[in-house]
Length: 517
Image 1 (cartoon, rainbow, N blue to C red):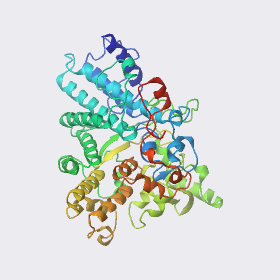
Image 2 (tube, one colour):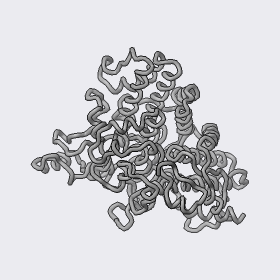
Image 3 (cartoon, rainbow, N blue to C red):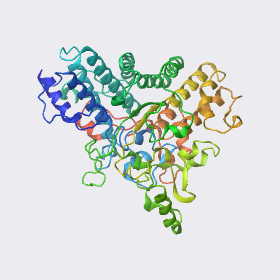
Image 4 (cartoon, helix red, strand yellow):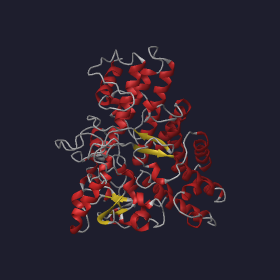
């Protein structure tokens, strides 16, 4: 019991720092371990706390996982040299830079917070399972949510670091601190078991007050991605078709509708995390000692332009400001995530998705940088700088269609794969002559999928994962063109994995470093 009390005390300290639109209870200031998990509401609060951890800066909030999945690849880059994105964007990663805790975020932050999710999930499962004070329905739902987030965390850990410490029970802190690395295949087997439980017990969709929680289809999507990475194409296709045919989700008629901030829970979105404007304390401080950022949600500010950087011609300065004012908009962001030179140059000019991914002018006024509008919110009334209420998109159905197309092509060639690719391309072009790729052989279709996923899912934290599983990561980066950094020069073979942070190695003698670092 002493071990559980220690863990629960840690759990309470690190989870009840967040706010959600769903289950907006006031966290208790002090909760005795022996009294917690005594009601259905306690169990619900525990899951709310777990969501707070995955929404903080180093995972799905602010820069978060974007840095490890998108920066330094061939789609986005910063508009200027900046320590937030230097390590990954320019491949200066090392065990030391992984620990750069004085910056906005670090490899170490992501590592630690993913393991915080795992620690807390293990405690929740242990304290809820078989607890007679909690109703059976709530037990099942809470355990399914906890197992989903444990699976999600281990999936990211194996993607980013490969073999890693692994435990699925409430160990005490000393035991955790001595764990060596477990083979990633063993971890993935456990992840698949958790995802299976989640799919069998999570809801297909949620009522309005609970939107933002992961459904069974989010779990199914991760499972499909795991099968595809293992090149188990039949299992991947089966899972994709299950989502396409049985889920309540549907493709929207146009690409732009998917990213409409006024329709964040549209039918195409499988999972997005719910954030709220004007709620402080959602995250660990983004900039300690710098009050302007507070600790509200500000990921859209990374994509919004910074007014002092624009326009391209100084003579257009007032013209730009007048045009923004007329539209009720501001360039109120940081501009730290822009379209890379390579992405902007290669994006097809006749593709209707281009204006949502490539913005080189505003109302005809040339800009210095090329921005990505689909994640912007320039309405300064509803979405002020560093205080946005926009959701964080995680998974959507278009991704599943492209996954199904890839699996079918790998299994049987392209003949029956076009039925999954064509709906995505049809809404991206004006005419059939433009979108129709009939006549491709298997390799041609494979290469078309490489590009189609780039255009469709740009900056949605899929690119590095895709390039690595396809085996073309290094070649693509080395042959891409960039404006700010030179990742194409600096990238090395070992960069397919991140370094284990130095602090973790110093604290745990049983941890070993990834080769090359």
